[in-house]
Length: 145
Image (cartoon, rainbow, N blue to C red):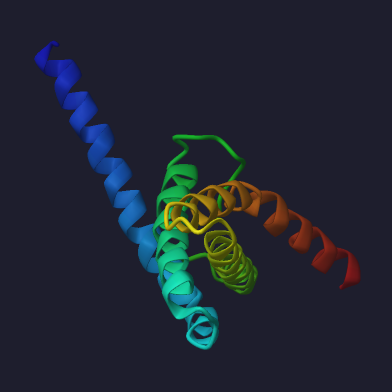
């Protein structure tokens, strides 16, 4: 591998890690109310494993989609205030839903790996739809005003 190609690859990975870091911060902060509610969910072991998997997968997915490593539409910037309520609600639904679905699947199947894979796949797939959801809510808000 050429030195220039290696340097480009390192810069691309570094940019992706930067995107994932800030996405992890954003998702973690915006889903705090949902995480509080998950504290009461049972069984706690399955919920905590699936919740952690959902958070990690969500950070990786948002960073990947926002950085346009996988194109899913135009993502709002992390500091975009008009989309903040929509992002908070959507992230909360995704993380909470994926966590509970993963915990339920883990208990049903009896394997901890299911409690990791299910929320990761469900969360990443659901987050790909965020640009469509934000656009739809913004259009609906303009029509009603």
